[in-house]
Length: 309
Image (tube, rainbow, N blue to C red; front, top):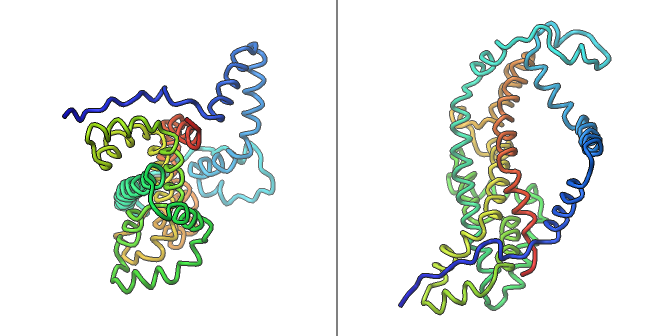
């Protein structure tokens, strides 16, 4: 029996309301004159200035000499913001102030494990909620959604006691294993995405004798790449910026992550603001690069979630 199933192209899925709004906005922009486009971009750039000022201050401080950083000035001017002269040597000094390469490897390792675990486990659970029928599905789904409103501080003490009883304290297991149990927000996001996929694809595969696992792995997952990429991006950012987790469970300096290592730099070299700002600038560079390369996928994954067939 032929078990191959043709997968419908993603273009067959109708766009969501957000996608239609974006398309209408693009059509309006294409109808504007050059002067109107210039004014629109100029206004948008002005609105971005308050958000970019802290970032500009951090980068400029990373290039300033110590005399300029600690100079007494009560006003923020362009002269006080720009370094004179620029001390590019602050960056090599900052990289040697802490074992930056070790912390970077630890962080990337955690990001890799948590992204794979969270995305795969959440997709597996979401497929059950979105495509399968079983008794108590609605109640279980609402219970899962309710856990999103539960603050992490409420369960921090019992979860810490559990991991300490399992002798996981001081290892990466408390930071990695929970990711393989699914994340409620990702499950909700992927459930809405699975529900909007055409049911004819799964029905045709079942008629050809495909199992539910094969339908999930070979049909549903390839069609869900935008939503999966969105979950992976969220998880990567959360793990990259995580400070509380390593603070609670990591006690070996050789296992520190970048976020925790920068805090240790502040506690041991509190007066070296140039080194701290240089390390912070290097810390956010991967996030900025990741945003520019994945913004279209991120918007596509959010926009197509929850739309109807």
